[in-house]
Length: 174
Image (cartoon, helix red, strand yellow):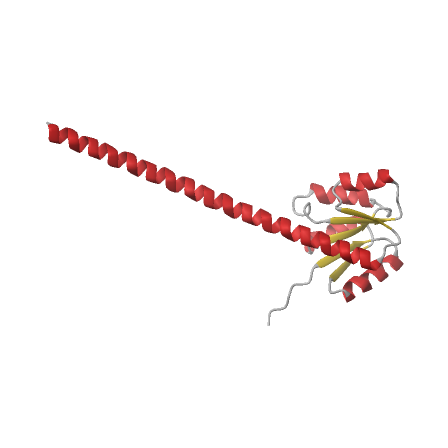
């Protein structure tokens, strides 16, 4: 029996209590969970293991969550990973900033475990569907390219056949 691949969630938070609670809850919920305590180590870690989704704290030492997200979205290999911000910042300005730099969701702490689980599942589904859509679009593009080449070849064959027929009629008439 083939085992289903576990989705990988990266939690980036400098608070050990938050990390521990989320790690346990998400592990128990069937996810493979990775942790990072700051933005720099998160970006380094993603170079080796690509998560399916990132839970990102905003207020951290070093580069904050917003800058971490900006750097992720600037990297072609990382830009399509969904980022959910988890933060104590609840101002609309902060929320809008999070969305404008590429976050897919924004939750204020303390987070409700069932709510975060629902949001994670929703964003993993959306991400999977986007990936499937991109793959199908590429397949359609390739099929279209092949059809265009086939039409061009058939058109050339018809032109050559018509030329031959005209030459045949001309030589018969002479």
